Length: 339
Length: 296
Image (cartoon, rainbow over all chains, first blue to last red; front, side, top):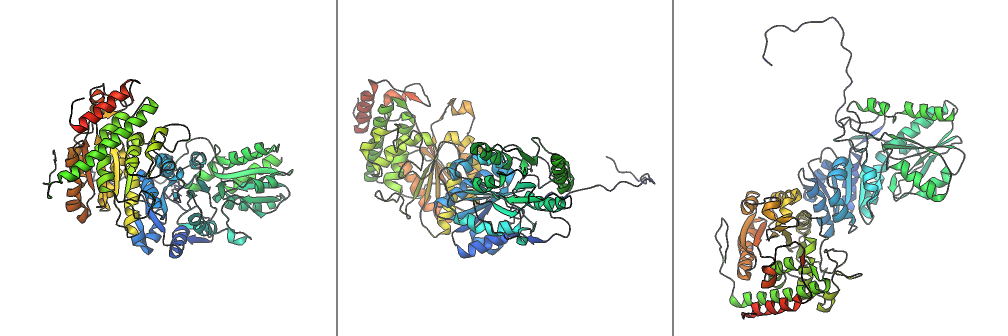
């Protein structure tokens, strides 16, 4: 376009304020209690206690909170470049020498781009490599290239792999040392930056492989993981104002799944709802559904999950509302189900 | 010797005694491979024969290991990323005393520790599970980093094939090894110019291979991979020139499928070679005659 010296045409109409979103916007509510970079700080703490822990990233150190570790342990941090196959192949090689690698990238690149390396080099020999996946599910408005809406579906079929979907900073801080201590590979759906602190309000401790009942309730039971546990708790509070009594069961470990705890909670007359930051295909809902069917429990379960489609770009609050992950949408869905 | 590199060979040539010792090991490795091939009646015998001199140079001359303790911490690591070359690798592991020679005839059978494609979970001395090509060098980079971090003096040698140069991950690893200055990492590329669908230059042209590795910052030598003296000299050059300055090294080995057995050398080149029942004895006789320098 050629430059012009003419003044732009002025208009008296007021333009509507556009809603924008940073690529890795925080999903914390305004004024919510948060913790900064809980994964990075937890990894530093774990590494102080265990000299075998090393950190790797594929050009996303700053965006996966790995930079905290890199600064604390520069000699134990390895920048592998924007090369995810190398990242996970090398992590496997390091584990073969007795180290405990934490290797970070975005979930989309771990799940879609480097799957063969995770599968054959890490999971098949059952190595203690901890895969740290940023931007799980719908935690960026950047579009399908960065929205890992199907990461759990992809990873659930991989033998030996433990999958953890933490709710908040408490989960992450407590999970990191347990991931390091557990044999075999793990995948952490990372929440990074200023991460909400939610579970400190409950009598709760993260235990790898365990589901926990956060609150009881007589009318509805929510089974949730990841940031949707935060939304489940908020929705439960909102539903109380409608005289609906909601229980919340938090299942941060998706695989191996704590079927016993969840099935015991589902074996009642309450309305059962699963809530996940993931496509309705192959994630928490289907994990619960298969546990229900296998046990012979004839129980209807309703999913709150992302639709089976490529999602729009846009601001995160807009998209969470659009695709049903917002508190308002959850409340409306439950009230509609209860009639 | 057909050493070709931008840098001249700085060290004296390997002694005749050393070359003879490795040639003898290569002969036994080829013999072992024929034993395994006969059990199957077909398979990757051609590759094993072609790469036998490379395996012999590594196991009989280069690697530090303890046959009775294959997982000994101080060992050098040899990574086979071409899983289908396992027949050659098992033959070498038998020569090295890590796998009993008598066990070789279980190759590829149910419940054998020697599956058709090499896997670390099955076989002592097998460092990684190959098969999905283009993985080995990425793992080798991590092993080299891990060993160095822990103060180990162990080396890492990755055996790969020219077909694996098709895989982008190989080049990710090549960049990583140079970036991290992994002088204790050596890649050996078997250039037999043959892939599953045919000749390498008809499948995906990888040449010029030497220039590619040099441009990635590797100390690069291209040799006749069936010339034991050339292979040993290449390793000596690496120890003298590349390893001390933290430069990863690659030996590009031009080999001949079926090498050592004229019947198979002249057969139509095939990734998966079929050999008739009555031909195995002929193969063995030709191998021995060639090794002893007498006509079959």
